[in-house]
Length: 205
Ligand SMILES: C[S@@+](CC[C@H](N)C(=O)[O-])C[C@H]1O[C@@H](n2cnc3c(N)ncnc32)[C@H](O)[C@@H]1O
Image (tube, rainbow, N blue to C red; front, side, top):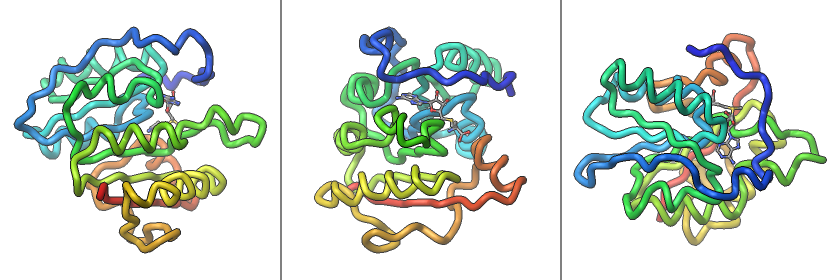
């Protein structure tokens, strides 16, 4: 795992408005799993080792992490690509007509203070973009150890109920743990330190 970069970047900065990443090479015949805000992509590395017949794409706004992930994925010959982008703005462009079977939003936000609310990753724009790039029946999984962030995410997806169905029932959190057999770095950290984790699981209608 790379040395964790401490500083977070402001996704609203003009620097991120234009897409300057590299598009992933995707095979239309193989299922695609997407993590938005993947950081060093521990979760996707674990998924890719477990099921290497699928394809894994991580979106990340911190460019150094993207290069780190791609170097290590290539060295390990895993079907995993990280893409430098601002997810809300560039998700449909990155998918370029491909459709994801799963979307993970693992511990999406460092921005839990009210004054930074507009920097949060999960918003209406992102939910609409996720709907655009997922197949009917695709799973969308959100986890957070910050109550306000989890509640906000729930509200965003509930307001898009014509596009997504909550598998735990309307306005409910998913209480059956993480069913995907991989843990993100933040998830591992939260579990090791005994923090509560709120989870949400939707299907694309
Ligand atoms: C708190 S970290 C969680 C990383 C990882 N998913 C985990 O669970 O360990 C959130 C990540 O999302 C990235 N991020 C935040 N806003 C983003 C955006 N608009 N587009 C792409 N990545 C973003 C951050 O740079 C950071 O690496």
